[in-house]
Length: 243
Image 1: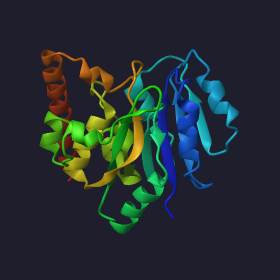
Image 2 (image 1 turned 90 degrees about the vertical axis):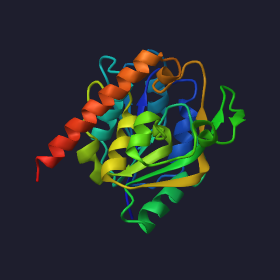
Image 3 (image 1 turned 30 degrees about the vertical axis):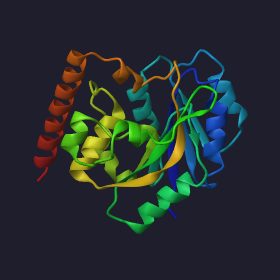
Image 4 (image 1 turned 90 degrees about the horizontal axis):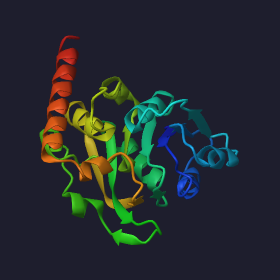
């Protein structure tokens, strides 16, 4: 059996966090874990986590706000599982998500990353779209295509622990951790897409992280892609020098 680590970066997540944690914990085995890094929340987030009194939850509290990318990196660095899932604080995992992901990893030893489709829900949990990928566009694993338009949404994916040596550390100037993971996996690994919604991804006015991409100007989008290209070239040179 493969052990699972679910990695979360949370910040002022009191409104939806309890429901999300409940949807995750009921799918995990006793030897799995949820590694939560709280990014200096000022609301009841930490109290909600502690109230679960579940030994599978590992809570780490940032003294100062580090931002979503570095907070996710910290969570992943504290994970011990064979398979690492990324999770947002405000989504809902649908039943059998973990089982279906693990089934793919077990059936295909060469697959290093698995991701699924997602439903989109609003603040009240009402479904506003049946498929994230119908909105985003068909999934492709090609790294060049993902450099242009990323199809790797962190809350929908999981990867093998062996990929950490390539994924981490996240470059300090990378625009978003899941974009980096997707491109690097496209170069050095193999992805498997489950064409089925296995989470409900919540879109609301307080979304952090990827929401910045929805409001970025053309110049900022170009700059982010140049930064990604620079960091990918640096990684390629570093890996080449090892041989």
